[in-house]
Length: 115
Length: 114
Image 1 (cartoon, one colour):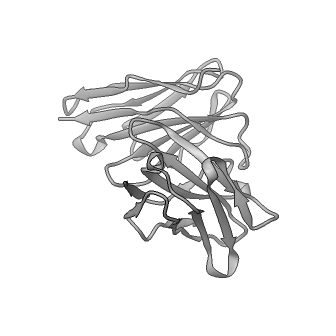
Image 2 (image 1 turned 90 degrees about the vertical axis):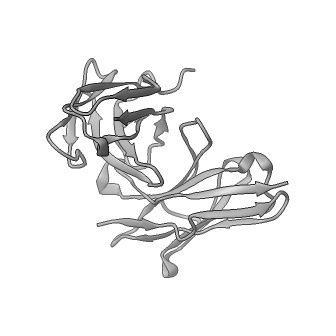
């Protein structure tokens, strides 16, 4: 079956512009996670959704970052007034439920470059 | 707070040689431990995970890892490396109370020499 998909795969934008990153989780997966991977770094947790609600937004770096999920499926991560330090690969993952033992399945990521 | 350290940024091994990638974690209670592999242009793929029970965990692609509580380690091993194993490897730690929110190490890049 289809895995987690993300779009676009690459995004180049100018400083100050807003961007939207999309994640399509595996069908039936109720939990969805966003991570950020900066060059040479591990993954940094941003936010997770259980259904359409986001119980944990603690990882969002600033109020320029927001995310939503609709219909318990597709999620959008929005970055407003982008800065150069926002350049990174943004990864989305989904799992069957929000249990800590559930395997997270990752998408290929969106590479964001802010000029 | 939980944390993960992968001491080796880059490791090079010859094809057919054995491999061990180190991972040390810090967490107050029993951790949930994971190893992921990220090949160029690919998303992360789970190799194996440990929650409880047998401390030697078998994963996919011939990998195994051993949980050593006394050393706070969860090292990844493979007896004979294949050229296709060249990738970046991430160790991660989670917990029962964190609802899947894992903390990742900075990764180890594996190069395989022919």
